[in-house]
Image (cartoon, rainbow, N blue to C red; front, side, top):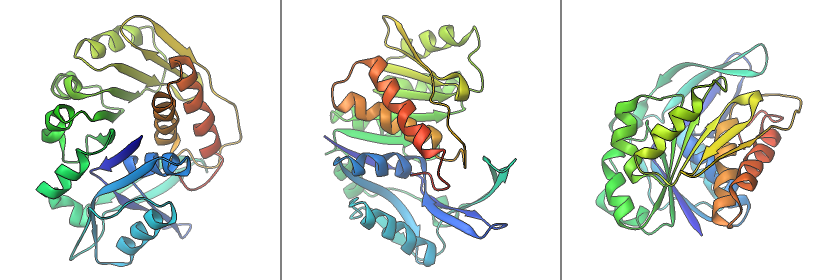
Length: 261
């Protein structure tokens, strides 16, 4: 199996503590898969600055293909970050840099279509390509994060293999929401609830899983690592409850670190 992450990437910068790391939802996700021997690639854009070099360095460290990671004259996208109460990440400001005008080339698109799995999200600027990816046989892993807008779901979910939603609480309405999301066509819809665990609906039944309680250093990367663990479970033919378990184990490991991988 292999997986490409196409779309948004950036550098998270914590100015008040002098720390930073190369990241992006898809980047974080495929780092974990690369560690497990999955062939991976980043399809995106960085600038010609020091931050762009750091993204290439991260990809080289984990053996992720960068042949379609564009480098454009200018600055790499940056998220100014802070930690709330010492552990919870806060996004202060996005400075888009070269990501603002990112357009994948036809060669980038055709390359991405050779992968079994493709990860992207609402910020990736490739939503118009989802039908093409599905037609090519790619299994699209889509991170909606906290967005639950029905217009987005209706437009995106028919082309998605597995969709992930981040929810603050496990409310009584969540099952109806997952049923609605599944009705648009994905094979699986997954909701995560932080300390309340996770839930998956496959059109037949609901599956639930708790979390592993661990000391938290930084919540950045919790969602991306959960997606990586769950996707690893799908790739290796595990049962859905075990896929949820893989996500819970990996996310518990990541929140104990500062970096998201």
